[in-house]
Length: 272
Image (cartoon, one colour):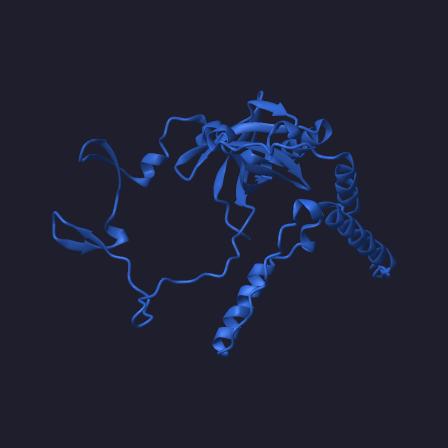
């Protein structure tokens, strides 16, 4: 069983629920190493101290905060457990909000919360209350040497905790100085676009969208090992304004045919 990365309590009102938190996602990227171009040797990361004129390893480092130019105060791991904030071991619910009130732009990482054995009943009660109200609990939680804004939502038999970006971490669109297109959309173009969107509408099933880049990268590595070269896929060309209507019509027809083909396909027999 995975090891809990954080332990503490959920509290709302006078209710306190001991919980454990687990990572909900894991990166599956293919890893590459930086190599010395001359001999393809993996270099060692070294640290050099100019004052003592010596190299040292990670085990010889400490965490220091620069409180004045060139002057540091050292903090040990045990010191971070003494940071005087409630959120260090307490997810104190500050409000219950509607899911649509949180813009997806604010979502960061995802985790699972599970109850300690003695808190199974209040945990289940809290989860059921979230389900019935259709709301998310907004709180703060401190881990990884910083405090995170977060929200809690019911997920099957557990509760998912999503860390959220703080408002100052979101880059305002105004800062990008984006200009809106200076033309009006024709009704017939919009009608065709809506037809295309409706023809492609479906429920989101993540298993239908595998990581094709990951698999293709493995093929590329295998081809390199065999001394072969793969051809790159050409990027589709953007439709010219004059061809927009014909491109929309062709897209709608293709989407409709694809939907009809899917309907005609025999369904796999359900397992008892």
